[in-house]
Image (cartoon, rainbow, N blue to C red; front, side, top):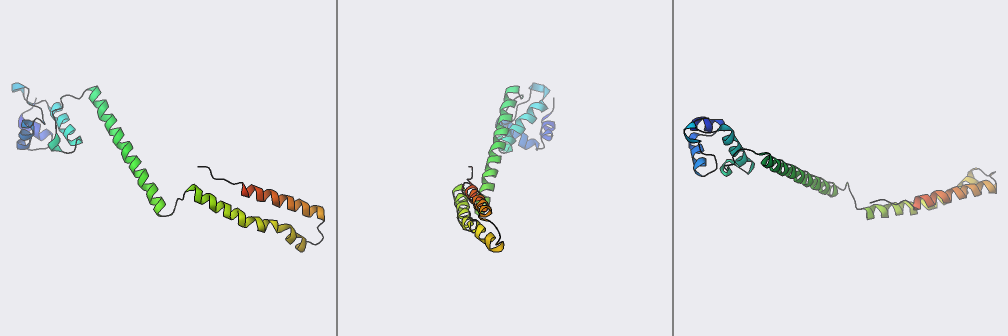
Amino acid sequence: MASLEEAAAHVFISAATFTKLRREGKLPSPKGRAGYVLDDVRRAYIEGLKNGNAENVSEAGPMTAERQKYADDYSSARARQAKALADKLELENKLRRGELAPIEILQAALEQVAARTRPALESLPAQLKREIPHLRATELAVARRLVVHVSDEIADVRLDA
């Protein structure tokens, strides 16, 4: 058990502030002549700090397992909320900087690349014949077949959401 001055010093406030908060019901009252229970004073003061500031301190009494669970759940929820907000801001910043694009735009870009690539690939057998005149028709047919296969593979590329 502690005196008023000891209880105030325990939570690093003046005796006058302690008295004011006690009168407002934000800190526990003394237990008769025995004085203040420092654990109760500390818990009530910390509860007030958790709620925004020392002026919101409420007489909380001893911390029960159920109250601790609620306090932990609240802290976890606040942490999840802060992370979600940070993730959202990070995504918005990436969009603004042009680091991300909608899948529809990326798919359209891939289709343009495929459309521009196909003619170049299809011209390969003719270029081979010019560069290597002794190529036979069967060899050029194999080259054409491979070009068509590669062109079809490129055209079939799709982005998964």
